[in-house]
Image (tube, rainbow, N blue to C red; front, side):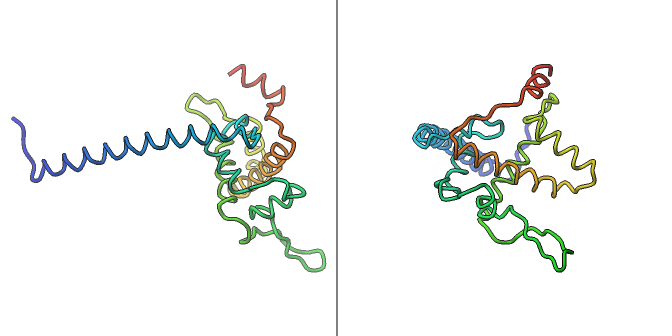
Length: 183
């Protein structure tokens, strides 16, 4: 015996419509990702060789940064992204504080990428063991998790800057490769 709820036919129609919309959007996203991945070679982008950076993340970084040659060094890129701290001091005493200046989308992208780097899969395999080790050491040393993520984001700025400037690929250091192969 099936119990019919009030307005069940309307609910079913709405649900079917939502499922169709989601399937359509999923198909569109796949097409966009294919188009973006076909464009990345024109930019000589090697960012996708780094764990945690896929086609979309690489395109997002490239679109926010633009021409890497506009930045003479990684510090200027960090300042542009709003990740470089500002020092407030007087007579040698002071604090470093995060800035409210800079490109917010770039800052959010690097911060999200820092989170991606310390992720551990359900099987216990870290995405990037180097960043996870660094994260754990700094948290154990007494830094807050947010501070450590900002430090990781700043480190990622240096790495991304070097990869884009020199058109080099990401290579995991040997000591971490051995650990990754054991797992």
